[in-house]
Image (cartoon, rainbow over all chains, first blue to last red; front, top):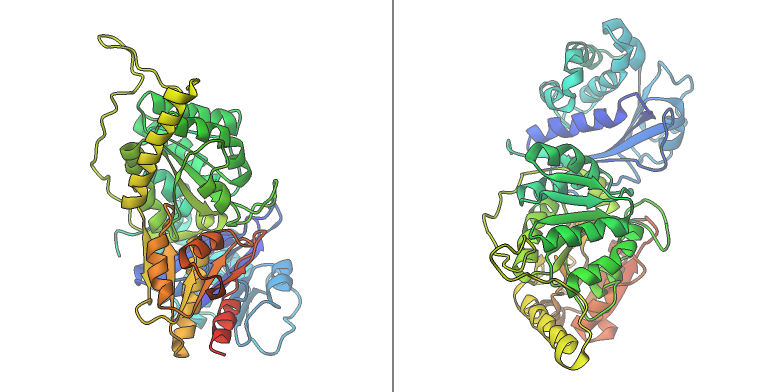
Length: 179
Length: 350
């Protein structure tokens, strides 16, 4: 197992945290992981992304020029990262906010209404959890749902631990949903 | 793996310095190493230490000079252009024979360059940007674990030889998070009878980097320094060999470049190509002898760097056969591409 993942969206959607969550969960399974945020001249409200590598083998570069999985939380992110996806890779996109379709026909595509699922379960802030929950269902070898839920205890700051009940509901709902 | 934690390389350096007993840290912010001052600002007060954001890089390195002269374990950190500004202080600290740890998370240059990781300050680190016949012990880790372990070791080396030790990383290493285990304190202690601790009951200590009489003072002092450097060259060379026993082709790389080279070697080995990695962990002292022995058995030696050719000069000095030495580098914040390394090594087979 070796996946190179880009999680992208706008600042505040929790894409960096979603990447950390995957890493912390995969660590529990003894996998090699790396996480690196994009750190250009970023600003509030701009786009943000992180590169995550999860592998059975030691990781070379933490930077991911051609991901095998892209999680796109908003339109600009899908435009930016769909072309970089490896042939046969997975594009999981947030169809609550992205109202256009991916262009490529040589990749696997999953649309998830991340904001809608999150809002239905209690907080639209947890759209990142919906994306991760759906991703886990599509790529069960990556990391188990139980370990993702367990990793929330470390990934989420003390201040935000109170939101974990909703986070878990959203993760589970998106995990068992196909829309 | 349960005791492993996930931290950025920069934060791991900060925690490791605290584990090593560093209680005095002075710095001026610069990306991509800002997590070090941020971490130290939060953690040092919790352990009774001093975090001080200086008014400039120059001030920060001279605060390190002062703290070290008083016998404290002191550290500063910066990135390439900031390290340029510290060179005067580093030369003074070397001249005064004081220990300290300097962290450089290199970014693209020259000038202000950019904020992405780079390795284009190899010359500056290993040849010294400051004046004089001095050396800085330079350690180049390649993972978050190694950043942490080597930071602890750096303080011991600095105290043992009373010289500045540099941890030379890059923006990618500093920014990336990886699982690692917190290092243990080494438990070593060092007497510092020369420290400026107040002269009550003893003769005053004097620490200076100026010795005005050439014949009996400055040359003699330099010869003493060289003795220390020779001792370091004899005892402190560190490197890692990976799949070199049967290697016909040797890749030489350090830090992030070494990680990428290692991935490329994995692919090449699947094709049956006998290639391995020689990774210097100390850039000064450089493992010349060890690389020479490895290269004598090899047909080709490829140096991979995030620069347009700096460490390759040391590789040539080691190999002593320029026709064997090849180079591949990317710079300005770009990373070497694994496929390009693979293509190069394949081409050596004809």
